[in-house]
Image: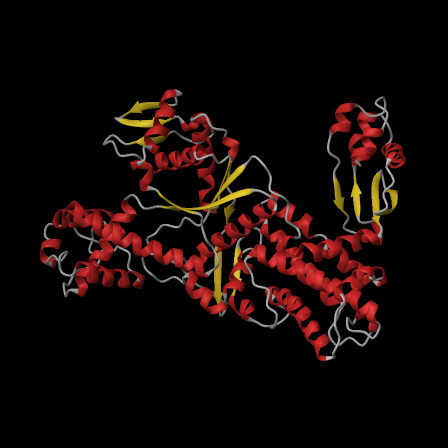
Length: 584
């Protein structure tokens, strides 16, 4: 198409129009060919011609190509391309030659991508909502790498601020309970049983050195809920008392111990799910490294801050936010927002041109705010992308499970994985677009039927292994060279459909990466499995639907095709982090 447009006379199509990349896409209806372009409709006005007339001129200018069987003009001026069977035969050969590398693009030069995802607060174990973030982020990272991008995966540890103090307090109170102290647990503390092992480890490490009598802890404290007090004020007073009794070094030690225990649990949980990170970035390091100082210096140097009521404010409203934001309180304490923009500046200073944050849908207001901060600090705001992940509802027996971290009455990601398996988790979490609410059906995810999409796709992969076992049991062997040479023998419509489906993988991976849409790959794999099951149906008496036939040449050709289908399924599942079993 590029050559055809370039060959048109300049008085018909100007240089600017000819320089535009033509849009060539797969057709939805096979009767319209394999590919189609709307180039004639797109450029008809500039060419001052009827679209069909321009289409005829483009077709006449197309160079001869043995992989194109015929070209047709359809409708108001669409140009449809019908590929020769040999084009698909050659591509099937490439699938078999490239194996696990099929569908992957060579490395691109230039842009480095920092992909941050999950980044759950280390105040409790990961729950089923975090699992969707993990599966989406991991699949997106794999897609971007398959498309040739240089990707670094990062987890941002929110290890600063009041929530960490409450975590440490909660662990310390459980530690005191282990030593026999009767301590009323604060309404605003973290109540989950997940803290008990961390408290036990604190006792094993510190012995009785952190012990304090319950009476000393309670004296002079305000009332808590539900005794008519304010739970926020109560927990803050309790933290202050703990700091007083333990001393700052002692309380800091409890913080470090508690964080280490929670981060280790999160890291192990994700690793068991097959989700790993290149960096685990500490929020506290932003202060110690001077990153927050540098961010505020840049804002002030560009004239985007001002003082009001003793606090330092960022003129966020000048950059698309709905109001200005405090970056430093009157007491000199930096805000979470100051940390956020400092963190993103730090990403840029580390050499990453593209920043992708995978966040929950409730962070939609955060996007313009941080982009504004980047712009105010002299960085391009468009460098930041934020795919937002909608909520997950877990259904057990038709009943929706409520979640609340402090109350501890939630289903953890680990519990879900142990119940339905890693494969179902990774697959189901990305089965829908990230901007759609997800209802996770436990019964369907665990079922071993074709109604379960992950089972259906894995079964297609396992069936190829079954065919190879049957081949060996009959004393037959596959001749790969003869099979490739005989691909022209595959003339059945279902075989053509399967060849088309297999060879779509590179386009699907490119599209899914470009649109940040792992669910596109899920849909492709379901369609590929359907085409495979339809082409060679187990137990079908029709010889056209059997792989192991008496004709050795035809048998080897069909084996070549099903092996290519198996490779495409395996490659796609690997991107999603789902296994490709040999037996089911």
